[in-house]
Amino acid sequence: MDNSTVPSRRVRFMKIISLGSNIGSGVFIATGKALATGGPGNMVIAYTIVCTSVWAVLQSLSEMTIAFPVSGNYIDYADRWVDPALAFGAGFAEWLGWTAIVASEAGFFNVLVQYWSEGSMPLAATISIFLFACLVIFTLPNKVFAWFEYVTSLIKIVVFLIIIVLSLALVLGAGPNGYMHHGDTWKTLPAFLNGFSGFANCALLAVWAVGDQVFIGIMGGEAESPRFSMGHATKLVPFRVNFIYVISVVFITLLVPSDDDRLLGGSGVAASPFIIAVQDSGIPGISSLLNAGMICGVIAVAAEAVYLSSRVLRTMAHQKLIWEGLARVDVRGRPRLALIVTSIVAVLLSYIQIAAGGLTVLNWLIAITSASFFANWIIICFVNWKFHRALKAQNDPLFTELYAWKSSLWPLAPVWLTLISLFLLGGNGFAVSNFFQNILGLLLIFGFTIGYKIIFRTPWRNPKTADLSTGRRSLSADEISMLDNYYRQPPWRRFLTYVQLW
Image 1: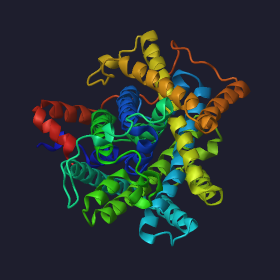
Image 2 (image 1 turned 90 degrees about the vertical axis):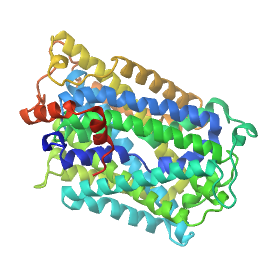
Image 3 (image 1 turned 180 degrees about the vertical axis):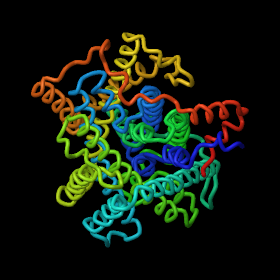
Image 4 (image 1 turned 120 degrees about the vertical axis):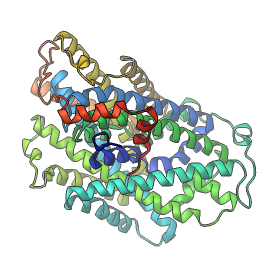
């Protein structure tokens, strides 16, 4: 293959990281809670709906990111095409959601460590170890973080593939105690537990598990070739989410009954439905292997969260939405002050679990994060619509340019995402027993947005004069040459670029 058709190592890094991003405790362990609270029917429907939203998010986000690959991503777009107050609200929601993820992953790290220590290690010690491992990465050169995310993403992908293959074997009766599973877990127990409330709980956990995928957009904004990187990510990530996640959820519902006490009461990977199925089959030696892989996963997700949150703060400072000092970077290009602020808040949220009860705080953190993601999905849809209005009002030829990238079947993606987000928001706000817990994130986001609008009297952007030039990137001669050679290849060779892991 000619070198001009091969993406650089940075592009391949982003591809692997995009595949492995967000694979963490939400998939490995929290699926057990979803099964126990919603039953197999609610679980499959909720995860399927949420997973289709990932396609819509990346479709809506990619066409803006490819044309305007700025580090701040859709927060910058909300400012220039809608209203600075909406940009502030979106930035606050993103920062809050991902900072809360650091603390929630600290709680799950403790759960995983206790599987080996059998309760002998104090919560404060495990949280301290976790925070050190997560934050020390940002004191090292940037390439260390890139390699860390690349390697841990590979580990998570391999672990997940092992789980899928193993789950299939268990369904077919593998193991000394194994037997063929014919769907008894659907027949002997209610498929839909706790009505719509059960579905809403499953949806909440599903959103937290798959994430808002904005991490991919921000990385794409900083990529060497956004047209190639984001173009691949919009196909890779929805495939990973829709195929691997949904398949794994279906296996869970076949292998583990929803009334199994271990789903909510087990420690470490023993609380994972995958491990419950392995233990029941009598296969030895798998639990510790998966426990180690899952520990890598939760640390990696937390590091992603710190990275993303600090970049969000820096973007808001660049746009003068908050104190401009947070936009400063050190000699290595890292937003040092933004990293410090994010780290301090993440540390505080993590240690609150010691005083307030780990499981209780964990549930609040999950609810806040999911609400933040719901809100930002709606914001992304609205910003994308305003982006198209600005292009039309100014007769901008963006989508007619060479290798221009436009969302498939637009406006299907933003319309679908808006409908799903409103449906899930309503479900979690009005059908879940912990009403205040599930709308707290929304109250914070909308309260901060409206307050910012009232205090600063920010202007509503006119599509006819909205900024369609700052940060706009035309394809370079090298990128055009690479894309020419890439699209001249037969389909099977282009397919290999999606599955190449090095």
